Length: 181
Image (cartoon, rainbow, N blue to C red):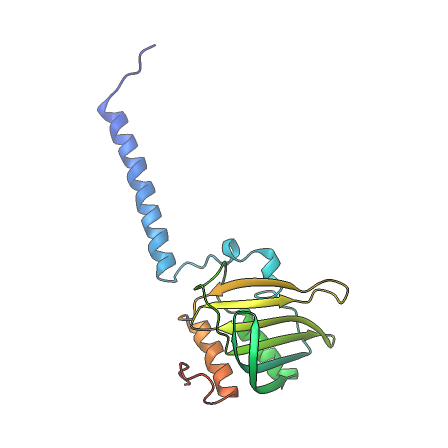
């Protein structure tokens, strides 16, 4: 059996390769421009309960901190959110463009957030806008050990700027990089 080569076969392969290249370039460009949300692919289910699927919390503690990596060296201010304030913060938190994996290889948090469900500590997060990452300490049950997780986000998005502005308005002057509107 002899394979026959024709100009029509070459043209068909050329069309397939060209169409594939155009689709790939379009997807990459859309992702780079932030037009394509790929949260379901990138945010694993284990993180969703701490991020986009965060359950309703009856109390949220927000602190202005100084720290490095997993150590908080100073708490410069603290605020407890309940009722409407907690609900407003949850809405902003769930809207964040979280991504699996690390941001930059540093973590100098300026805020720590503790989420309470039924008055029990559910999760704790430290946020570094400069490094585009959040470190979580998960508190799934009182009997289990604390689990450390890291997730990144894009601090340049509208949603992240809204979170940063909200936090910096709670603690004026703590975050010199924030632009309050």
